Amino acid sequence: MKKIICLLLCLALFTVSCDKNGVAETESKDIAETQEDNLIRTTDGMVYEKTGDSGINFTGRWFEKEIGGVNHHVTVNDGSEFQFAVSGTETVTVVFTVITSLKTPYYAYMIDGSDPERKHITDGDISLPDTGEHVIRIITDGITESESKYKNEIGFAFRDIDAHGGTVIGIKPLNKTVMFMGDSITEGVRALSMDADSDGNSATHSYPWYCASRLGAIAINCGFAASGTVGAGSFAPFLDTVNRFSETRENSMPAPDVIVINYGHNDVYFKESDVTPRYNAALDALRTKYPDAPIFVLIPFSQTHADTIRECCAGRDYITVVETNGWNPSTTDGIHLNAFGANSAGTRLAAEIKRVLGEDFFSVGSQS
Image (cartoon, rainbow, N blue to C red; front, top):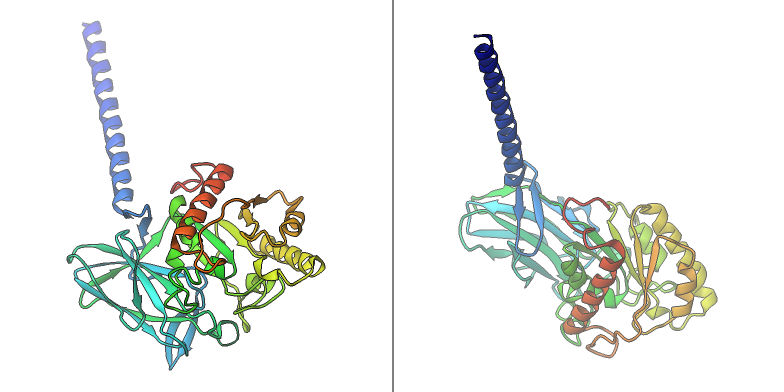
């Protein structure tokens, strides 16, 4: 009899244990499902987390500014972007205010990871395939290089989203960011044609865009035409670009995960003694501002000041020098990369970054 009672007790305990384990497993599964339900994945490899509000997420060098008595988000960079989701509408309107004095700039939009489509900022209507939930990326894509960006903060001024009765859903990308600093080659000047204006310039046809796409990352384009280590060009020299959004505004951008530098081509008329101290100062400033970001320094495709740049990078274990001799990307005019050349260079650069950081570095959820 005692043996039977003991057997029954053991069976009961085993059953309770199984039930508890079953509940634990179910709860764990439910939590995982809840977390996954809070994520949105798009066909371009982006992963977004819903924020629980109706806010818009800005990535890149944006700042707030009042224009005509209305608050705007402003960037002077091609290749800055913002993201949001919508539901319950077949049309959204992105409202920009034109502040440029030359040709009308372009933006590019992506729906659920589609290829970028370019439109003038005066045409903000975007048609959606249905009234379901959709993710929209807006990229500042093309501006005339000679606009007064540094002195007068002339660029893209975003005001609002009109969802036409639908609901704007706040999202935050979980993919890593790569900031690309450089000149017109980085910016995407003349990527589409010989015109160095909004018609010919395109951030979504630049090597930073293609590189980040291959990495599953977001490109933060910080290229300014004609700029260099010494010369200001259309914005400011390298060091000032690190520190400032404009002549009167300090750089307040959140830290990127990786930094790529491609300066030197426009320093061709300056001596090594002019370039070296300024290049070193800019590298020091970048390390101080973003101490955790690994840095990749591209030798200019023209090989201008290649030895000087290597010497500046020597002894800095957080910098990888990327040799580009022999890459020979195709160009529009012998200098500026066309879309094909940008794709080629971006793909090669992405492979080098992966080689150094590892294949898993850019996986969503990985620790840098």
